Length: 123
Image (tube, rainbow, N blue to C red; front, side, top):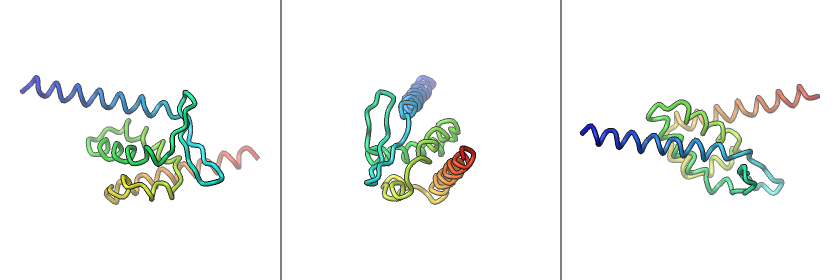
């Protein structure tokens, strides 16, 4: 029983480490005039936001349920940069509980407020 629990903890820790490393590879989300959103990785590769938005929502739900605040914050940081219409179009987002959706939009709102503040400070 103890060996099984250790095995589960090891797998959980390895998954968390992989996800945090994966998230650290995202430099920024670039929005183009035609409405396309792409995540640029640190190696210059651009991925369509729709290709990973569902995954980010699933990871957010799982880490929120186990109470891993560090992982949740890292995922929210990336989700907050996504356009609201892209978030709403995500099946992963639609499958979340309302309280989880609220947290994502709360993070998005805070991100937009900080963007506005920094724009005003630059003027």
